[in-house]
Image (cartoon, rainbow, N blue to C red; front, side, top):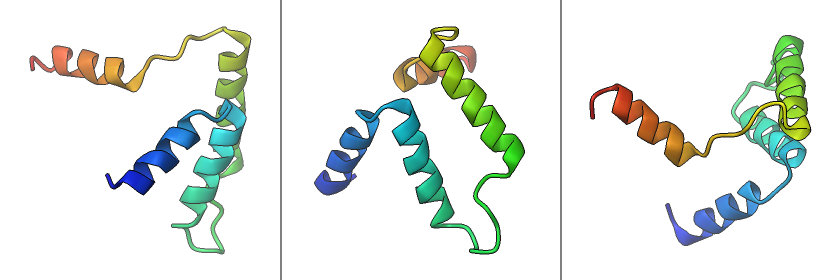
Length: 77
């Protein structure tokens, strides 16, 4: 990853959940045909629900490094 991209990723990760989600939607939409929405309404509802769960403390986020470590462990690596 080049330094500019790394800075951009670091800045994006520092954003609040809602802002990061908007950023994700915008980036994904840039790869989608204009006539097709990036997420249908059912996915938007999942995103809203999961964001609310995070904000309320109902669920605890797991850092990506930990997810990768657990996946490698389960895979025997």
